[in-house]
Length: 203
Image (cartoon, rainbow, N blue to C red; front, side, top):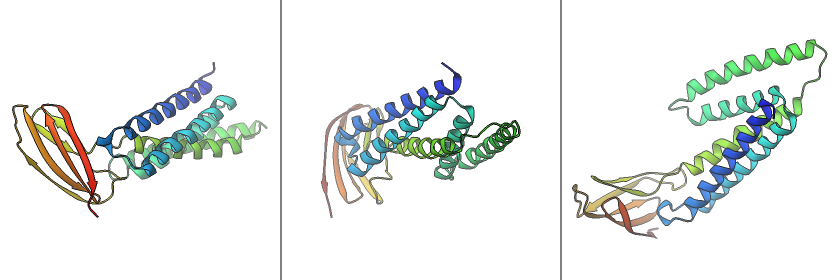
């Protein structure tokens, strides 16, 4: 198997893994993953898998480079407040290298897989970030040895507040209430185990 095709297989495997994670999280109440997040995650993974199949079919480094460029650009914009600038700079470098490789091929009288490059950039560049965004959505609450931690979500919109009772730093039972995104969550931890979790709409 050629290296470009191996990259395509890797994209398909990663997309499949992200889809499995999204489905697993959707089946656990503590993630409270809305239907929109499942659609975004599984749909993005499916689109990315199509792009990976295109990489396998083409076996062309230009198509792989276009997919990588799309991924870096979309990822850079999405992560602009953290490592986005670095990703965009890497994308610019990949774009320059891709342009030079395309020019050399054109000068040699060879045709360019323009359509395949555009489709790969769109499917891999958009599909993987959306699938990763849904898969990385954390649980509402996580029990730790010295307390609990809560997480916000791009899918559970709205700011929130939390309060805890019976907190035991030694790892014993603790419980609390979290209000977030129009829902109220009640939980109880026994050490690092979440033993009770329920929620209800508040508005």
